Length: 307
Picture 1 (cartoon, rainbow, N blue to C red):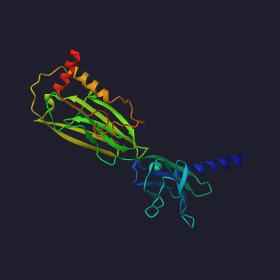
Picture 2 (picture 1 turned 30 degrees about the vertical axis):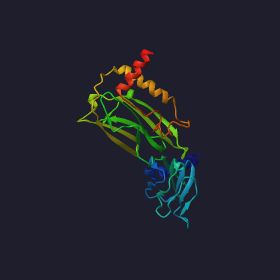
Picture 3 (picture 1 turned 180 degrees about the horizontal axis):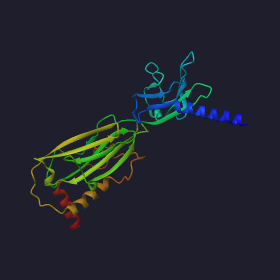
Picture 4 (picture 1 turned 180 degrees about the vertical axis):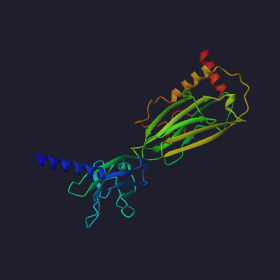
């Protein structure tokens, strides 16, 4: 009886030795990839003198590749939606995936097995997220060539459809704008790609003396999808001659700007709404894109007081 126990203990220890000798030294799987692009999956291992029985690749628990060096047919590829292996540029431990789609996103696992009698198995796994990047640069609509001190700049920046949606950011003279000057972002489902969204971010503020640097005001809109994409559009605005009208209080101006914008931008979310305003050639984008001078705002305020 004791002899049997000793044998079992030795067998257990021997099995543990095999387990420790087979290991994956490096798994290279990119965490982010671009739709329609390609990626390399690499599984480096160390058998420490043992024999390899098989190396398998799985996506979301389903096998799509098997390498068995002792077989006549060493390489086997199994079809799976979203997994398109380039067999010519792949080897025993390196796979190249082509023509990535949204279905290519998922959990990829490399599994390594030693030869019998124990067939000790180890594995490692990583996630891949496949992004659809915007097909064009961010667009700014509603902007005039020149503005005076006291004018209202009210514009939109939009990013074309992407997955996930792009993050937009406004900068004035290369400095991030205060949150109170920004409205949004809003998202709209793409008509061409229901799995993607367009992003819109509004900027509105009163032009002040300090905004002009040597007679130029710079507006910049940045679009980002970390860590794969960043683009920006820059506009330089020329200072026009002042009209000589006395300024009114900023609080009154802000109230009037908000009222005028709210007449045209009463959508709280663009996620599942057919935005007819955005498609109107007269409105030049989401909401009302306006350039309002101090004099016009003052006139509206005075008329309201008189009436």
